[in-house]
Length: 187
Length: 59
Image (cartoon, rainbow over all chains, first blue to last red; front, top):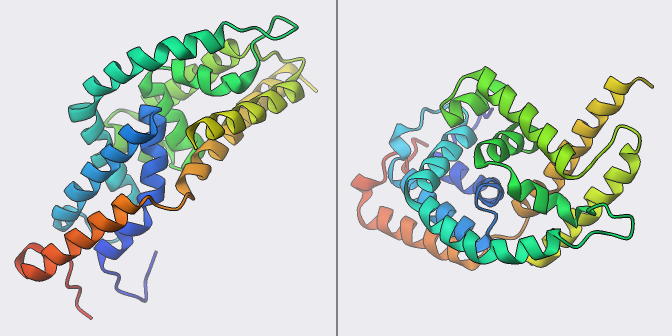
């Protein structure tokens, strides 16, 4: 990417911190835990910068470290957090709208209900711009596995949000509102 | 419009909303803890250059 300027990989590393936080958030669905993981992953990456191959995709390298950090150290703690917050989420989700349909403040509620492997596949490919191949390598699985996780994730979201083929516009609006609501909650 | 088109449009909408949520976090200003941590890491590197593999790029 940077043919002209030899960049100190540690300087480049810093530029990916925002993306790392976003990816961690999609894994943990908890801002504090996400930043704890990013912090641990940052230290690991910094101390192992020699194992990064210049010219390869640093973001994919960092996301791999971040993922490993999450799955090996933080997942258990995550479940404890979820137990507490799950109760609140369930309360929200049970409040149907006037037409009986769950409104998607509820996109985030629906997203929360996906298995983490579907969440990460959706985020890597759908949001962070990874190719299927990069996502597969980052997650240590076959390309077909990533594709199927994405398909199942989308199908499940569609189902959870009761999106129908007949009203995609309504769905968009509902999702947009829900994302805004989610981000306000996180702020 | 055929049904498959509408269905993939839902997929697009899902991606759009995923991106929006992702970008919002990605573009947030970094919390102070990261600036502090980076400063510590850099200080450690300069105190002990042997650890800074790749930190002293050939310029």
